[in-house]
Amino acid sequence: MKKSGLTANQIKVIALCAMTLDHLASYGSAIPVLSMYSHFLRIIGRIAAPLFLFALTESIHYTHNRTVFVFRLYFGAVGVGLFTAITNYFFGSSIGRFSGNNILFTYFYTALYVLLIELLKQSVENKNVKNSIICVLAIASTIMPNYISNYLFQEVVSTDWAWDLVNSFVVGPLQVEYSILFIIMGVLMYFAPNKYYKVIILAIFSLGCYYGDRFQTILLMFSPDPYYADPQCWMILAAPIILAYNGEKGKVHKWFFYFYYPTHRYLIAVVEFIYLTVQSM
Picture 1 (cartoon, rainbow, N blue to C red):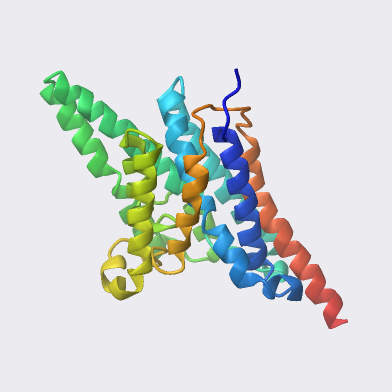
Picture 2: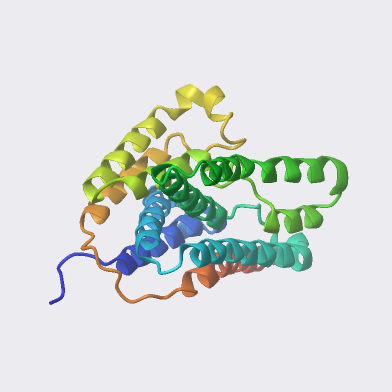
């Protein structure tokens, strides 16, 4: 019997629509009809990331192979990065360069930390000191990509395109989109016993965003460009959608979201470029 409410995949579709509206305002801001409603579209867009994060934490629970799942997220993030690097190289001077924004790395680290913490819990419960130490060291080592990319940026990389390539493969947890605080929220959501606790966690972090502007100095310790500030507090609007979750996976479209994420952003930028070109004639 089909349960009432929303499946995980339906929540992802809602998140995808919200993300698209947000990117219409972000990447198509020069188009009057979009700039007119920019503020409203950006508010709607705030629910996209937490909804994807919620769906991610549910997927981790039910996936058959968590290691494969984590690797799929990483290679999905690499694919998005390479798409950005290639389009910037060939069309960046005309259409405009895209920044290194790639939220798939945020989701990758969320899943990676969940996997490592779960392994650590099992090792501690089994009183396996060796594996416990390995897990702790593995968690600590995830900070290394930050130092690697910073070294490459300062000592080796000399062009924007080369930096795009570095960002395609090496992004640390302190460099991810929405900051490491978003990763922490995702990990807490995963270990929350049910959707009601997940919404409470979302509410706490949303409240933190509301007052985030008062703590910019502290936030800059977590990310050079923190998203955890107003208006990110509007992500609380995702709460009713999470509460409507019926516990079912729904129809799965594994790779569609990976392809849609970079291509729709670029198409919006192309449309804006065409519009500006026509207006200048």
